[in-house]
Length: 212
Image (cartoon, rainbow, N blue to C red; front, side):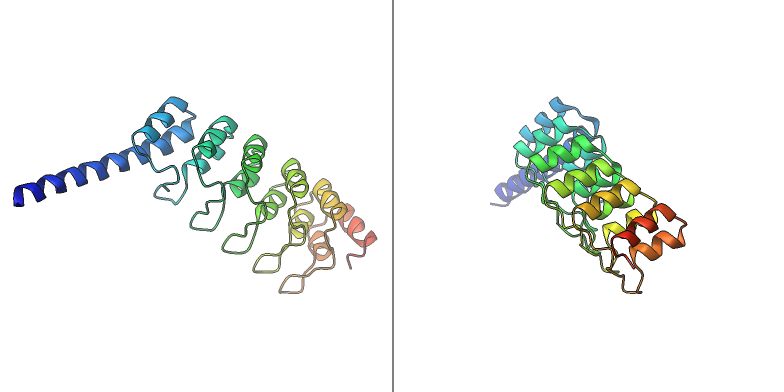
């Protein structure tokens, strides 16, 4: 009886180690854009959503390389497109931060939710606006992003754009209905941030739409 139990224990441990190795290979393949290696890892039992030590999923690794083909492949094999890492960020947030438009398009096409908040309540629109990625801001707005969403400090995407001097993004957000009168928990507004940083054109633009 002990021999049989020992045999099954060995099989279980070997299977578990093999699966873990397959997970690592899938993460590496997703990052490197190696489609064959990704297919092999999945065939060998890799968990399509298994996070690495930092909490990033294979889909997130593909986003870092702006690899739309790999992203589409992973989603077609049931990768969770709205998976959140330890900070509550999704693959779409990573694409927005990096300015990876092809990745963002592939994620949206694959069903990514543009309004999922992270642990600090920020969204992909916050990320894109803070990094000056106007094309992704435009895409997110088109896909229904909440332009007046605020994080736990009360900061809106418009405030980030105003502070960073991103006139095009400010215009996009205002056109989509962003409210320039919203304030942070400290009572600051998009206009006050623009003025503090010497972004006079943006300050004038915000004043013209009631951002006082």
